Length: 280
Image (cartoon, rainbow, N blue to C red; front, side):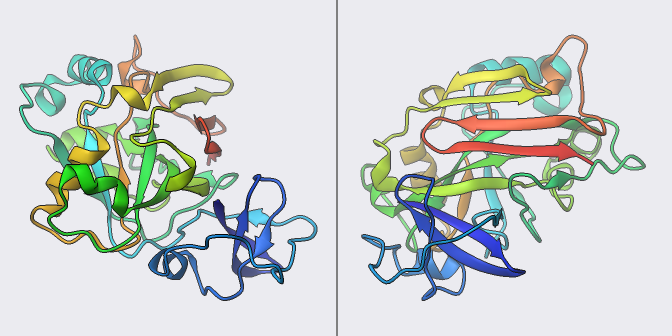
């Protein structure tokens, strides 16, 4: 099943689709968080109205219940390029996974702009990531049981202000400016994708291929991520985990090449779709 949050005649609504083409309204759910809490749907109700005409796709979870949990330096090739850009900020040995969070007041969807903050940010970067959506409250989850706690998957662009990220010697501020967490275009339910996911992941800027990898290359896999995080904290239903980005980000280019006004960033993950945003 594919789940969407849409804007129809100025009202946010939840919709579902089997093929990504024909959408049906799920009027019993106030928002995506309520749908996730209920465990989703096994099939589209026979009386569900079909979405007619043009609608706007929003982020599947426009207002996350908690900060988005993120993995840093979770692909080996990305670790190398990050170290080249700033050894002080990204270098050193990493015997354990790096976790951080992003504040998200509102997550925009595909087609919406990403603000560039020209007076604040001079090194704006993209990071295409597989987003993992927790489906039920998770605490002390064994890694072999992790799949039972996943509601589905989406695409997250972990937009980053590298100058703020390196200046403050931590990543929260440089990752958490308003508009820095576009997601979409939908959530694909976990039963649609073999576990653990082995999906092609890529990103283009103005049509130029920048990132091209597979989620099979995650250093810390999704079972381990859920196991480690839930060992000491409760992951509420609806929690979003951004699992890390592969090599090919702007700071890894020679010379580093950052986003500018008018650039079109398209993040694609196999079986999920494409998230496209323009730099404002």
